[in-house]
Length: 150
Ligand SMILES: Cc1cc2nc3c(=O)[nH]c(=O)nc-3n(C[C@H](O)[C@H](O)[C@H](O)COP(=O)(O)OP(=O)(O)OC[C@H]3O[C@@H](n4cnc5c(N)ncnc54)[C@H](O)[C@@H]3O)c2cc1C
Image: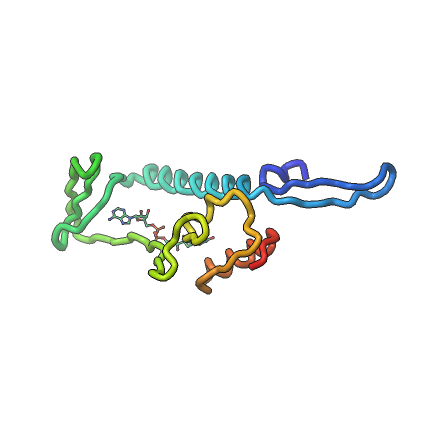
């Protein structure tokens, strides 16, 4: 209970003196999202440190393949500096980005991708989740439990 506000959960209690209290719960979505993003950042930092500790050389920049055995990484502002790295084996692991539907372009206010969702500071009254993968199901149940009509 003492740490609830750090999690974005605000507790209020009502009740006449000497009678059991009736708790009321409110969600501070800005605090919830701030904590989530901090946890994600911390996890990324931990991963980076583990790699460095294991002896991995990390180059931050935008990479592109340069033939079958090399990668060129632009590291300077607007791609002004380059680093070329050769290797026998290259693992391309560039992840995925949210698909944007042409009929419903995300504007970050009413239509949001998952990357924009964490900027929300107030709980929407109604929410429609498009997409039924694990992330969509997770958002649907999370926002339903936070009190939005999903
Ligand atoms: C909202 C959400 C919640 C999730 N929750 C969970 C969870 O609780 N548990 C779980 O296990 N999984 C979860 N996942 C899934 C998990 O995040 C992904 O499966 C995982 O991150 C995929 O890892 P990856 O390395 O393939 O890609 P990513 O994590 O996307 O990493 C790819 C990286 O490559 C970089 N990149 C792309 N192109 C280039 C380039 N040309 N040069 C240099 N860098 C480049 C990108 O910027 C990115 O940093 C979640 C996903 C989402 C969207």
